[in-house]
Image 1 (cartoon, rainbow, N blue to C red):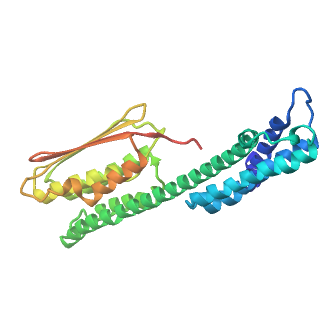
Image 2: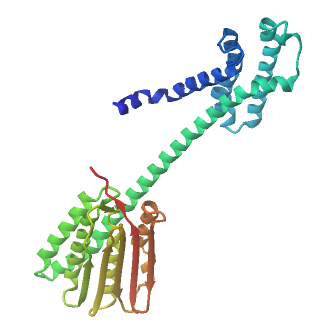
Length: 343
């Protein structure tokens, strides 16, 4: 009910705000302790100040100030202020207060002191309203850009993954390996998750870690008896979500570079721990031979993609450390996870 009413009133928010502001300001402007009542003359004098403010708010600000034509803006604003002074001193006071206030001109500064508060308040609130509206537009634009960039970065992961694994699958099929059907099933399970279950910015942590375990098993099939792969994961709380397909890049790189540099003695260690407060600690280590081409390991497309996504999704909430030794590559990533939203 309240949301529906808010949607109906949304196009008229500024109109309602201006009406309330004018009524409040008029009540303060016309209130007199000695004569606490409203008179029509108060309305006339107030409108004489409010109308120039209306012109400034809805003509001069848009046409000159917001287009950075400041000289024109201040010129026409000065003309409006001069109009208020002359109309009040030479017309309105002569009509309504000819024997008192209208009998003499008290001076420009004295009159300015009387009329400027109303104009400044009305223009100031309009300026603040426009600034808030503009900031909301900027925030919406930033969110749209962020969403577009995240979608673009996520779209880069699937082709990268498919390229590596289809090449490996092709080599197994050429050799007529009996493990080919098992690899196809594991690949199907992994792709199903990547294509259908991780379209949002965040997914349940438990599902993501199950996907990592399946992916590790798939990659481990390709190593066969040429090394050892250890995957350790602590008990996972069900109340947290994580950005999908971030951790998998490090595991994929570990397998890719270990296999590319050596034919045996491959050693890959993966450890994942999650505290009850939502602190995820990910550790991945792999060995490699220095004769291989690992110079660009920390600057590849996959890792650059991960860094950008971490900056977008976990600003100031993550720590990534990568150390490359002579024969070992270590990755440590710590993330302060988000709580899952209750349905």
